[in-house]
Image (tube, rainbow, N blue to C red; front, side):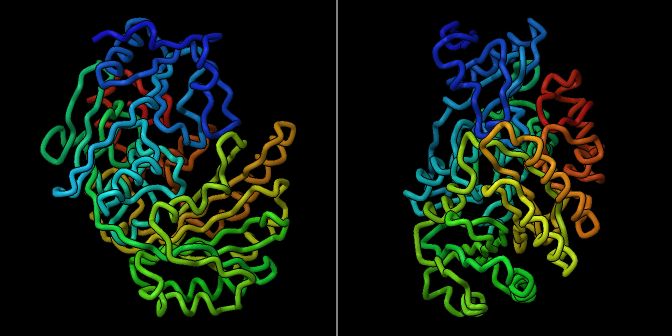
Length: 440
């Protein structure tokens, strides 16, 4: 297996700059070479080349990770974005998908057969990184995390070997891939379990920010006992016309008529300034957040899991949201419930089964001159919420400057040592280290 020289991009060549640019515009790294891979054989050849020349390697799937680990400086970037094949088997309710696919592309292919699986909240997120980090999404109450729906994976190891990982082959590797990130190899094919999908009822309820305390107090009391097919988030944001607001994002799996009794208390409380909830295809619901996080903006993210939305946390979030130097920044509380919590905790590396919310502090801006102010806002907000959150953090929401204890917390103290054992078996030299790294 050899990689055709035409599939390498070097600085100055046409396509090089486009290939090295990813979703987070803060990331401006320059690989020595970019391997544009179309097949598993291309990936294996690129890995062997990097080993022969002792090159630092980064791996790009969808390129949506906030830390920007997809791109390295002065090494070899293995670009999987050309690998967009997908085969749907409606009789088996499964799909085999390549790692260059984005969730919007995956969903269009599977919903043509009335099927879907848990995907991200943004349609231009890549399937690979989301799955390997666990995978939070709107369907997790019904069907668990994305990694809970992974049936098998084809993996190129640090030696350039090609392995199959599943519940029956290389089971330790399969366990680690589902939540352990890109530490163990390059996944070149994912096989997912799919589920029937029909219309959904989705949209936003928007309230003025000055009502946020009473709305969030109502919201936390409303959620217990709501069905697994309802997924919600609460978001502090600024509307396009400049209003400081709190939005409740709703995705209910069912028709508008199906949702009526469940959503009536939420839709009538306040009442909201705007009720933008309606019946729509699942693919449209998956794009609700897309305009809020466009490709090329500058991003810095801090996150934690938590058990409850306390009064003290509400007050901190209200105050900090108003202090954001950018109108594009947000603070998001994402509800976890149902199947993601019921799934066996030891069944996969993804660890965060007993948390009720994920808190994301999302600094989002466009002017490089304001980098310092926006990063400081996110960090200071994160420090202010620490009395109200847990130590755990979602690995896909870690930035590139996290200390070792935050990385351990992302993988879970009880699982980190087991992950290290798998790392020592499949990547003892830490060849794959451009990630939230588990050092062997």
